[in-house]
Length: 241
Length: 325
Image 1 (tube, helix red, strand yellow):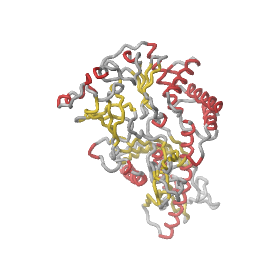
Image 2 (cartoon, helix red, strand yellow):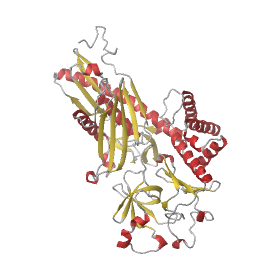
Image 3 (cartoon, chains in turn green, yellow):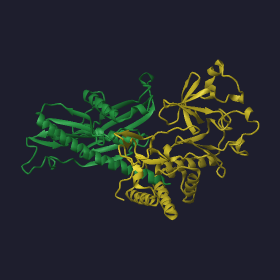
Image 4 (cartoon, helix red, strand yellow):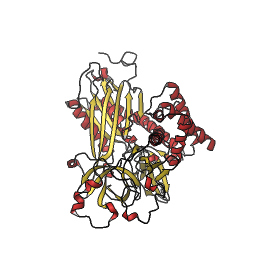
């Protein structure tokens, strides 16, 4: 299948190095400590953060750092074929773990001993790149909750189809069978927090795709920064004095 | 405009949305005295005078000699101390704060209290006044009868006694003004909207309503207790030792509250809710102001938590601010 037309356009009309349109909204759930939705094209994710709060089961309490928990789920209406997807299946368990580890690396857990932070992530619309989108939404929600972090985490996926590195795959490209990888990084500290790839590719190609994903993540980071700054300004200026 | 606003949790029609974002814009312009560099994001560099030295405060970290913010908020500088104050964070306790909390657990010799903090606060049995105000060592019998004082889900007002290194905090209710809260209405708002003041207990005599603005964002609204209407709540009467705790309310009894008073309490509560939703500072003046506005516009208490009232409150605030500036 041709994923890139002779004119150099992808199935959805993007260029190979183009991100999808980004959209985000902060503070979507009133009762939560922090919440956000994040959209990358047609992929839409909501993330909700509760905490830091008292640990629910005493045996899990850690006296020197916070306990971070994450629950990933997919709404049954998020894909074309309506299917009941719980939070218990293999994919969801793996993704919960990945998101938890990525966010835990960012949160300064040692500043919040004996407390617990819950991150709930749900995919509302799935169109490829849900992993990256979940991480971006979780970052926004954690920042909204005022939880101290080393740096924001920004994430983006990239793949290799028709001998071309391609940024931010959508569902069709994702299921095209080519290799794809997800990167999450700390833009200010210039460190990688997550790098996931499930297929084999030559090393020189990997480097290209990896660089492309990093560039994409940095662009996402810039967008996240702008959104957060807008939100902070709005809150401060509304308060006045 | 253009700038998307933070979601308000009232249903708004398109024209109301338009009016709201315009009013918010005017509010922002009027408050525009804050310098742009005062705002930081997570991971932003904070400008400091490296030559003369500085002290690293809360909300900051040092990476390769650079001072970075760890939360989104406003940079505050006190002499050499540089810190970042987050906005919508959980309650950050300080000794001496007045808080309103809910008992979550009765544990040996202590109560666990939810005060919207990073962990539940502890109220020791030795940090409460015994009924009758007798001063003595707490015995095993007292421990067994702890549920007579406060049980799970009771609301209390208390003061922060000490903060510990591990983030835990201890409360005390060793004053007549603190204790169990009954026959009233609790409203929760974001803690950053409540300023630390000398006075957190307020009596709005004109309405017969008492207000406790907990520093943790929990606001308690109730009728003025009959016994304290003659005296100032802060001045302890001479016979204070012999009276029961609980800010003068007769404990464990449901006091008859007239319909009129209930309506006034609801109106105050909704005024607090709307101010919280608008993100405006919450203090007695602003509450009374919103209350009076709702009366003069002829709005029922239940209509106060609708989109229209919300928009009008923001518009009114914008007008007031632009007049001042």
